[in-house]
Picture 1 (cartoon, rainbow over the protein chains, first blue to last red):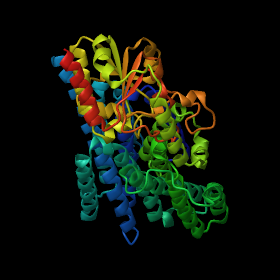
Picture 2 (tube, rainbow over the protein chains, first blue to last red):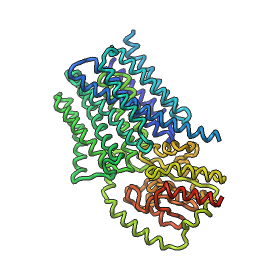
Picture 3 (cartoon, chains in turn orange, yellow):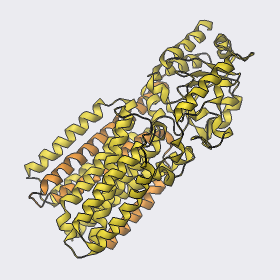
Picture 4 (cartoon, one colour):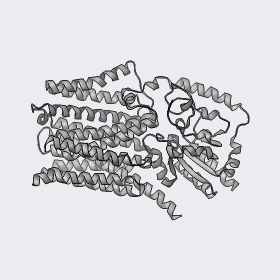
Length: 96
Length: 467
């Protein structure tokens, strides 16, 4: 993978992301943030990839995997929990 | 061909999936699906990497993955909504730490190259990851109350912070030119220190800004480590998170009339000691209670009975006293009486963006009832009664009328324009900013000092007795 391709991809993601994320209403800012938080655990992929070279360094990489996995799983789960509350809130009102 | 597929096409597809998931986050009824699509994409991405690098048969890998997942799951299940900010802060920190650790683990791979770029991205990832980690841990300790939520200062702190702020880029450049690993460790250590200095001086009400910023940094750290190690997906998605955090930071800064640079260099405004302001507030509070012709608590039943439109203004105090359910009950009672009820939410109410929305959603308040400041501020003038619950700085008229205070110039909810205001706050002390709330002195404002989880039900009772 050439560096230019990676950098162009990063730029494209940032631009597209900006357009989409700026349209999220304040109502959903906390779930957005915690969802993005889970997404920042994407570094898990890098950590896993770095594990292919075993040896003394793999202890560091393993720690990275554990931390990133906490971030990803915890982040998505907590966002899910929050968003279920939103749903329940509106559901109750419409039932009335 | 397979190489092209695995390294470019699949990551691009997975990224598109993430973007679609975020797009669904734009409306509340699709947001849950959006989040699950995001989680699914993440799972696919992890499986892809495991397959690509032949890691399926490595028990170490599974042990690490399962350990992390179980810890994360347990934390996410146990957290209360009021603790959400510190949870997010902590997760941010872990993400940042992971990004930095990966770089450390692969350092020999990255920097034996004679190419300067490897050094640059390594230094950047280490710096950003470390700041994210130490800053987030401090922020989360402050939010949890294990560290004081007041801004912490020591002599020479501003100078030290400023020096480190400029020191980090300098040694980064040196590391790139000189190519000595010791310099990279120096970057790491000073970035850790900077994160601590940055977060310790941030006070409770400024937390939304710093959490958003750390959120952005955790994405940048992931992105840079992805660029460093040639992982397209991590690089792109990390940038996405970076942008999202930046947008939220910008919104929070605007809502508090601050600029990001002043946040990064430290909150200069907070140099004044809140204690002196506290005593002033107490004195003026005594003086104003002598003023005649003001509304009193006895007027509350009449006011509510005659009201057509009632606005609720929640603040972090509502969360502290766990008065959300009481507020929901009050809203129900008011609506039963045929009144128009809306909730006016200031962008920085609470400790993270959107915090009030989550707290009220938890007790079943319909999200259609929640209105943002920009949309509702003109409605205060036609409102009969405002019930403020645990909110102070976000409705302090002093923000517009005085200069040189931490909240000067901050846009506020124009609560004062309503015909009557009931304030359910713990006491007359200033809010987090330490600036006396001049609203309390106005004649049409009825303060009900005390725990909001007790005072709000009193209002509800007053209303239903009349019913």
